[in-house]
Image (cartoon, rainbow, N blue to C red; front, top):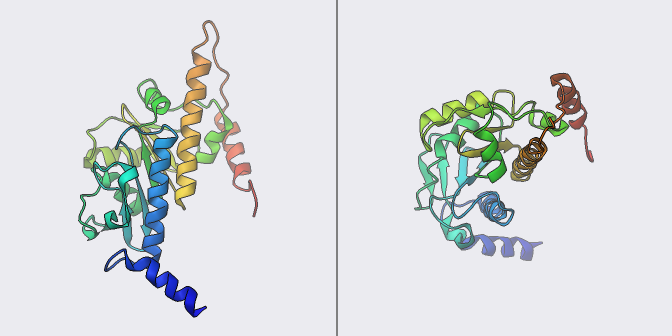
Length: 232
């Protein structure tokens, strides 16, 4: 046991002063999640961003750094007011959106992407049509937040309105944002949202046919059932 504890201390020694083991572990998961957004085609280059809350510290991807180059030395953390606590790299320009979510919800993780199908849908409708019952897993109809310049308080406010009683929304002419209790949950919601947007665009592309949509009640019923889905 003593040897295992020493190995753990040695493993975190390279992270530098001020980085707690739980923050180091969370940063590693954050980097893996950010890289997955690229691998799965949800972002291109350094677009999009990921964050995770550890206590009152928010670890967040830095601005303009390719995810495949991130290392333990690049750990970037701020407090809930945006003051930098960890690292020297500038946090993502979308930090206002992330902090707004942490201030107004019980979220512990946020994923923002420029997923192509979801972004396309954000330019067409005020909310994603109820094409599939998995809308219920996101709290109901996925709304589109009105456009505002990236990184601004206005965009963060528009996003919060669209996220009322929801765990995901579309950002008009911009992309997606989701939150969850874990990075895995937030990422899965992002992937699910992109899939539903792809589904709707595919269905509506057929000439002379109109997709059948679910009612608000059907989506709500599915949402209730999904709360108990999976292993306990």
